[in-house]
Image 1 (tube, rainbow, N blue to C red):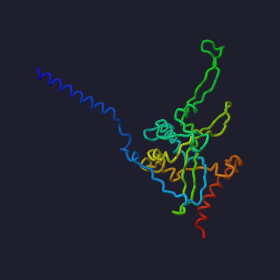
Image 2: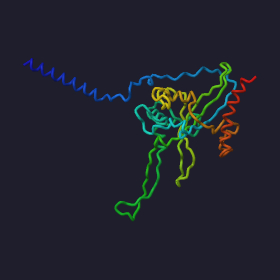
Image 3: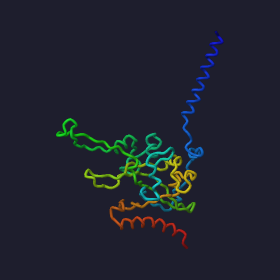
Image 4: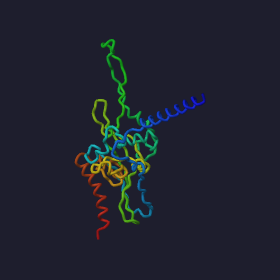
Length: 284
């Protein structure tokens, strides 16, 4: 009798091990690629060099716009739907906000003063429109209802960049540090006319570098072997942009005093000021 009980227990244990093994095999998805990609999870951003206030002899604050519809900036926009570890830039930010990894701030000012949550942002971006629809049982009568349109990450097509240029006499270098990034969507009036871009929220760039260093942008040359992270993209300035504001005594944007071609020329003028300052440092 004891022998029969022992054999039954052994059979149960063997069956349990087999079921566990099968469950483990089923839970592990096939490898999507020729090799396991583990380096990206270990990447750390290169720390900023130490700066002394006494060594900074010149500064200029610049605000830029990265339009993701430009060919050079399209890797920021795609893919429209996440694919494994590959996500669009705005999707990476939204997922991090939802997880609580990064902190977003109100778009009313770019001073990073008022924190906002993921839920507050999504509720604000949800579009609600009051319409009158015919009743299903009596089409001659109508009833009022509210139609809600959710926010999609593909609605973001532009990014605002706030950055400081400075000259460090200790190292004799002209460098730039990005301070904040602000996604923007196109806003429309009730009649469908465009009101221009609308800022959503600001994120503080130095606090997000760890996140950007662990997420890759599509590399047009080397594919996944290039390992081009978003931190590399911003630090190496691998994007196209135009200046929409530079610090001035009136605190006004270029669009406040110039339009059309004149605004483009003013934007290029702001860029050239920085280049001319740098080139003028080494002229004898």
